[in-house]
Image (cartoon, rainbow, N blue to C red):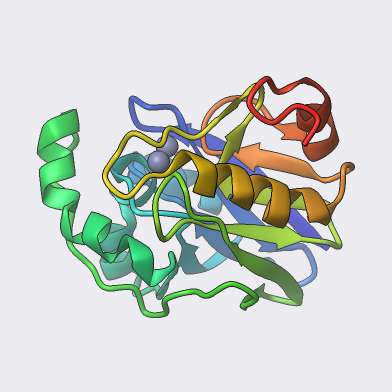
Length: 212
Ligand SMILES: [Zn+2]
Ligand SMILES: [Zn+2]
């Protein structure tokens, strides 16, 4: 069974999730945007073997620590979709713009595509390409656990910004309604920022996607 523990990191309080297979204690870390010593301490406290870095998209608060963590621990970087290549290339500028420590460059070990699967221990998660906030944004879905890690696609009561380069409002709405909603109303999602919610709750009450 898949388990996870979410740690808000950076000044943006970005929800970095450590996810693991509770049979093997093999783990992946979703969006290590920064605060790496704290994240490594959490992995150790949980008694896990960290084996992979998974990225939803390449904004600095999500991907800013990925290069350094990959180098220090010898980990592969999986994701996002290649549509975010320009955001990875822009990480040094993003660091300066938002007052982050200088971010180490990297090239993902594996770009992800819609319909791909990622595995950790005995657990499998489905990959959906959900552009709109960024062109290469992906989400990770565990049907078994009823959990989805959606980055900045959807939040409790809100949706991702679309005013950055490559963002597009209608594309984001389509990603939410055509790729997230079919996962099921009962699915609980971990957003990139703020509290968890369920897709059903957002379909009822989120002013941006209510009734869709
Ligand atoms: Zn973002
Ligand atoms: Zn974010």
